[in-house]
Image 1 (tube, rainbow, N blue to C red):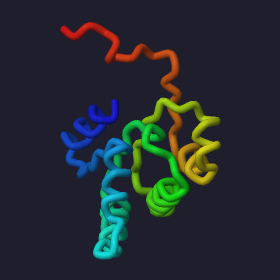
Image 2 (cartoon, rainbow, N blue to C red):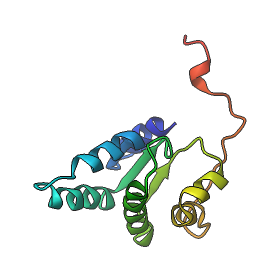
Image 3 (tube, rainbow, N blue to C red):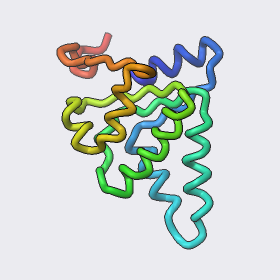
Image 4 (tube, rainbow, N blue to C red):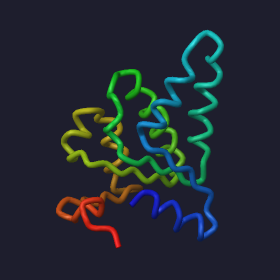
Length: 130
């Protein structure tokens, strides 16, 4: 779903950045260390400033307070600037709220967000490929 959205938006002329949440978290962690302090800010700012940001499978990464604080930083800045952001997850809404009420608030703010519950839609990965 997320990759399909990215491809469609790119075809329409958008500049889109796609991340699986696991990969984004790994990149954020790679910015740690004595020589890397500016790199973390660079990675966050690159994603804050992207025209369209797509985060796939939110919640499958290892959830730690450090990870959540950086996702909150990123998503809060995008929310403040009304930057289009697509987030996919298999987590129920109550689990997102338990992870971070701040992230949940940004994802469900009906003034700027559209929440689409895809529960009950068959998983395409469980269907035979043609």
